[in-house]
Length: 66
Image (tube, rainbow, N blue to C red):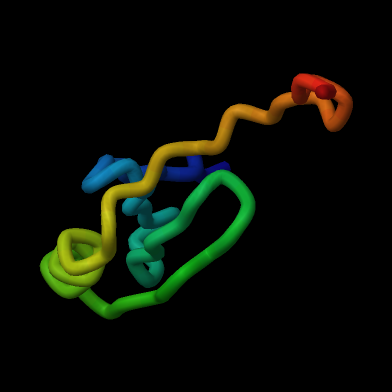
């Protein structure tokens, strides 16, 4: 029985991860943005992206009415 291996890092608000020595992936919470053969390529891609911050959702009726 083998144990799954997870390598995970953060760069500019993006997750950079690899599972079981597979390809390195650059992701947000809901999207996979790219898949790369090496950690360096994935980190370079994440560094080139604009900074990511998860949006805070406001209720639709939260604006002021005049």
